[in-house]
Length: 320
Ligand code: FO1
Image (tube, rainbow, N blue to C red):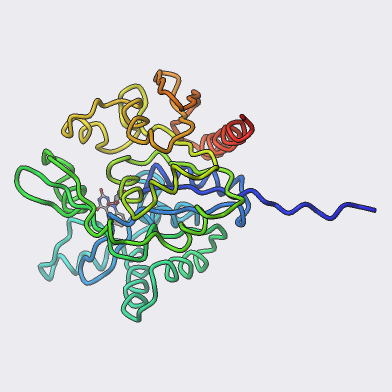
């Protein structure tokens, strides 16, 4: 008699921010089926602007997986127009945050659904489904968390620091307002409690701006430290330079040595494996380190890195 088909039992969790994380998330989406992957996205960058509720990292990941993202900048939509923003400008409104017409359509829907009382998880599930995405993309929490940068000139909400001030102010600290009271989303709790969880991947997003807000949620660091699944991070730094964004500047300003090793040390309480570029030598007790091509320029790079992550987690899981 033929054996019944074996159940696909492996499940993987990816934690990510915007552009860099979205690239690896796309790689995972190419090699894992929808029932094998949960993508959890930072919402500390979310804000209310021009009367709209905007979730830049969720949208970046969604547009990337839907094949709609503007490929050069890695956020926003391709073939975008800015008619609405031109009107805002003519009427004296703020235009430092580039909102395209198509993007605004999504923000209108999300803002309306939030006003109607739907959770961000439910809204994200609805929007991603309508964009044709088959994998689960969920916010880190349905509660409000807001990243604030402390600077010499006072506190700046995330997007005012990142976009309006172009990350120029010297920062003295980072806070994730609301994170301690915020509950991880059902998708995050479910994935971390799943007995079939076979690997957790920290995508190469900014550790302090994009990953830390997720780690700051009640219990998340503890759950990552206690899961039996291998937890693996991909370095966001290559040869002492950030792959993208202000990670190095922020590390210097916070008196952290700007290196791939320092990022691993920051994750040391829960990390089992670390994937670095061959240019970076990292040795840390209790953590296995492998070198790989981690700069993802093409789709083939994204898929190859996703495969490397999965193979590494299998290798770690098989070790006694
Ligand atoms: N980033 C910018 O540097 N300038 C912008 O004007 C801008 C607009 C924008 C609109 C929608 C969206 O989803 C993202 C947008 N981003 C913009 C990206 C975003 O600010 C950051 O990349 C993330 O928040 C950091 O991960």
